[in-house]
Length: 230
Image (cartoon, rainbow, N blue to C red; front, side, top):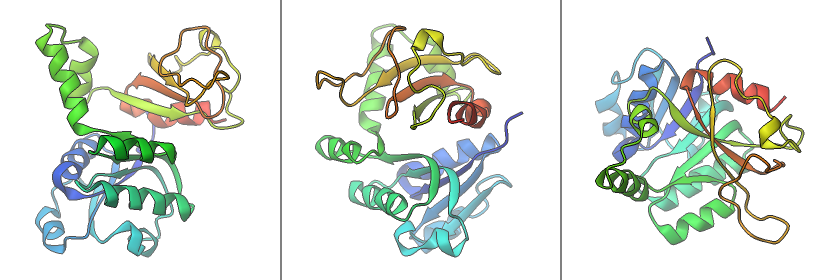
């Protein structure tokens, strides 16, 4: 079984605590940060044995104080777009070793700006709206039902230079290493014609910088990253 990931989440309310509790139940190593001391004291012990609540901010060096410079995932989960963006930039600029970084962004115009900086973004309102629209249309897909219960997840992977997938056609890559993985889509900011690609067929040739969106079981996440980035 794959080793547990180390996941740092900044911002207890309104999204961080729920995400941290779900990840903690999966036996991931979760660090939940918040600048509100009273809020931190309230939720100490709310995670499993593999979860820790810390009072402090990334931009004030709380991770350095805890000797944490390397982790698998960083999530900026405040309800303040500026705070989330600042925290992600701090992580990037101070060269923390992190495989995946994500910011919750609620302002659509600002989301585009954040994405241009190479930071993955999530819009809670849009995500909820899409799910509701599918249910209202009578199309509650199995993938969404399984994902919402935490049994599987949608995972974006950025293909780095030197990755074994760089230069490979989608139809020729083998991702069935442990369990089945489904390629949901591929995002490339610009192709040779200057157009943005958000979906790709089996003949699409991957290149460094592409973001591969996979449907995967959480316990296979780290093994898959190690395989792809060899």
